[in-house]
Length: 308
Image (tube, rainbow, N blue to C red; front, side):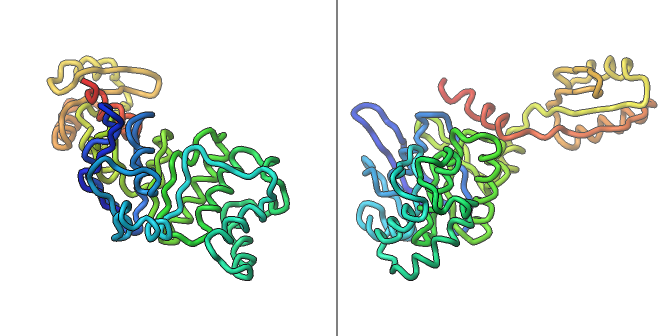
């Protein structure tokens, strides 16, 4: 659905995007992760035909964005990080205006608008003026606006930015429903754990360069250089702490009311060997498992040397 090759955007001597090679398959929910200024919005603006690249190519649905912008716009629904709404419109008028702009017949718009409002949980706000809506409601309304022409691809730049926790949960559930409908979604966000729950793949971008790409679980596994094991014992915990601190693959041992936390540089087989030896020495192990690495940990690990 999306393919970029050597995609680059420069502003004078500053490179905002550097030779981006990215493929997003049809029906995939792809998360774009990176700090402000990393190149996420630049990439999305190029894909949305709003910004011309300095060189390189980008295709959406087989159409090159600079040569066939009209065809690309039919395929996409774009929600920028700073969206505009017409405050003097009522909610239904707002969606009707955009539906008419896409050439959708009036009768079809009248059938479509209630469905869109239901999808984004705004049915009870259909006769409210846009300026009376909360920020989260306005963002959901803008998402509905992106869907008026039933696009194949949604490009969502920080769609949950500034939302309160409840509004973020509502947005997440809407995106899950859109995924179930078969939409391809390119979404950027700083809310990394929530992004991990809804995406099929992530791409980590830093200083205009794509520095990691893949399924969330695969990237997490690649970055588990220093794993953390959680161990609970029936007794002899102090002796076990002393034993673990002497282990060559252990870099740190911490102890609290929840048990023992072991920073471990070994692989899966080394974990198994450690557990077998502890049991062989008479330690009564109640819990022995690797603590899950969340997406924020992965992001920090990947990008910590990117500015060097």
